[in-house]
Image (cartoon, rainbow over all chains, first blue to last red; front, side):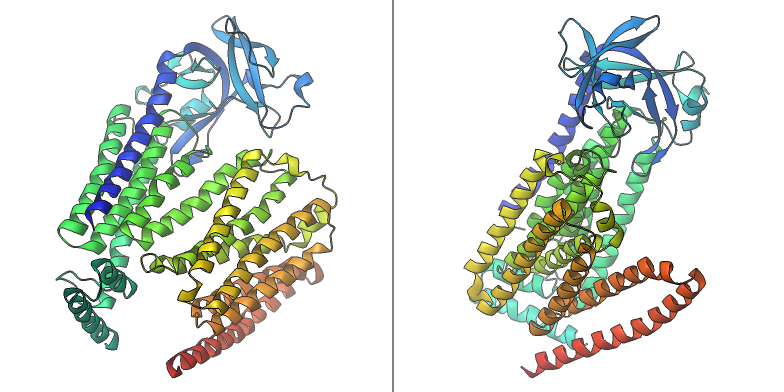
Length: 167
Length: 409
């Protein structure tokens, strides 16, 4: 391999590492710097070939208001949140980004006519998905970015942070 | 044995040509690559080299699958940051080992296999980061990112195995992006994406033909040709189903239901294919005008079929199913004719395989409705045996004739 090709090879490898680092840091920033809210959820338990066991999380706030029924699949929807006891629930839904003083979460209308917030998947160690699935009460603590994008911080199973080693 | 003798002689001759300044080191490398000749001291025979390559690549793929399974297990015993560190440091470490083994210690085939492992590990790393932050596996950006990271490596290492992985990732990336292009992946609008595969197939085939015009990339040509033909055939195959066209009449398909991103990427792919054919035209003296006409005709036919398919989906009716079965038949006959004319056995083999799959699909599509299931299975079995024999007989005769013609000329 010529010197030029060797340099190119390691430039591509460096670009791969930088790409991975950027991907991870964007997500990490969203987790650490966003506003924390807790959402009520209902989990089910499938498996991903590439990524292992995970729980699919559906949210109470994902139900689309009737007046948005004509909006196309994939359209952005913002749900303005308000505190309802120990969780946050949806108060209004809008196609426009709300005022920055509001606490809101952004999602897209999915094929089932519900709102997908991009927090519908929670990966768990192999063979522990049933713990989340069978729990009586599952809540998700998410971090909300400035644009309303949500990232999962942790899952609370029956009021406790999910940790399969303790069960 | 004759092949071994030829390889030994060619290896020695190439060394002498290079030493005498008749050819450059790059040309010597291209000749060795074309004939699968390893110039390292340990190289013994072409067959041995291929076996080493295949075994090393299989080893790399197995280790890669092991890494993916490791990530999928999502072991809670290993902290998240340790797992991320392992992949972020481990992936470049694999590349460095591959480079050292391949180009410093001069075991190029093993080195390439280790670099292929690095490319798989890169994909595993992307999915590990995604898993750590609970990003689902079907996220539309994960596989495209993997493809973008791996594709340049194929050209830097000049490895067919890495190019093969890149093509697989490109097709998978298109599949994952498709969920962003159609408003609903399960909706009828998804049918509008099918002709897009023809444009992609035409681009891959055109790229293969352009690669064939340059010594440095000639060894990639067949892989791109086969990929292009298979992707295009898959598109025509899907449009040959009677049920699809029966339902199209009742659908209200709108081209506006596909996202702008789809049309933009489609346009870019079409332009890239046109540029590739421009390169083929520019370098046509390499293989003659007649071959260029055949190649341009094939690419134009794929593009035209895509346009007809879109028009059919937008405005057509149930009768269109047989049009695309005729297109498939025409394509198969064209491939056999091209294979025979240009002495390419793989085209004939591909054509026979595509024809057989299409034929039996049509049989099962209609046979089950017309006959009882038991009779259908018996007739299918007999047809498979007789058809398989007939197709193999025809294929052997064509390939045999081509070889006779090749040795005679």
